[in-house]
Length: 548
Image (cartoon, rainbow, N blue to C red; front, side, top):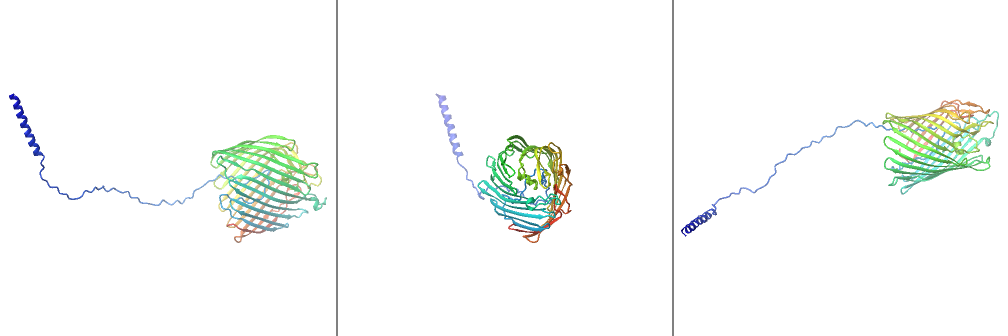
């Protein structure tokens, strides 16, 4: 009991000490706080980057650009396409300016010359009109000719399609003066040989391919050809070319066509029908180095009771280096020997009494490229086989008319070359040559009237503004011809030089002068037909409706 009382007294004493200590700690002493300023947070100043702008150094070096452009001249050995003057098509991406001109002149050999061209419209709708006339009268009796042509063409945009066409008329008047004038006497009506041609074409093509890369260009080309000796011929070519592109490198092309001919003359009992039908599917691949067209040309010739040929259609171009490419091909086709086509080769040909078509097969290879920025070149070798080829021979009575004889098979090794040179100052020179080695023929003793060698050169130079100089040279080795006694002989060669100048005397008026056969050489392209000697022709040209 005594111990419990002592414990209680001790706990009470300790509690009193604790209370007293707490009362002493809770009383704060008096203190003074002095506020000197309001608090403002401040960022440390950052260092800045200073730029000092300077202009780049002036580059006075002109870039040297090299273009791989082939020579633009084309030369054909025997089967050239007919060339007709046409109004230039304007660039669809530019603004078309009306371009009109009238050119007229006169020369010796009583040679009037007139030419005119007019165009109207814009890049979407264009119409052009062209007309020309020239005639001459040589020193030999009836050595005169006349060529007159009129043509209109144009195109109209209809949505994404372009409707185009042309229509024209041509009159060519010749005389068969190539006879012995001391032995024979003929009147103008007996030796006159005139040809009239009415031609028309209409077609529809798309301006741009659609989202599937599809393009089309169906067209019809129609010709009515007549002479002054009861010869009448109708030619119609219906062609449907289609193209489908696959990406940037591949394309498939096909052309379905029918070439129809109907020929009639008083010397024939019935009308000759000469029709060819063909389908040409071609697969095309191209990239920066290699280009290939591979296809076939199945063709049906109905002129001889029906004949089928499967011709190849292959050509390629392989770039070996930046300026040099390897080219080659193997192709074949039918050449239609219509009256109109034969007259385009030889204007002194007599009316044919039959029609047959030539099978042409050509295997060729070569190179093309450039040597520096100014020189381009192309060289190739071809092995060509002609089956049923028409050749021209003089008739065996007077020799003034040319008959066509059939060569059943002619093999030819041809070497063809082109060289082009361009220089600043609007100077250009192009040269083309063909060496034709007639290896063998089956039906005829010689390849009558085919040139073994020919060379052509063309120079154009504009030394100062509004002055243009030109010069042309051509030469060939004389072909074989058949004499009146049916023996073979060879003509002499030809060497002809032409030159001309045109200069402006105002913004709309210019003067021109052409000199032909400057060396006054006497030669014959067709046996017994001498060409005109030196002739000079000059006049004036008016240009209006265009910017200079």
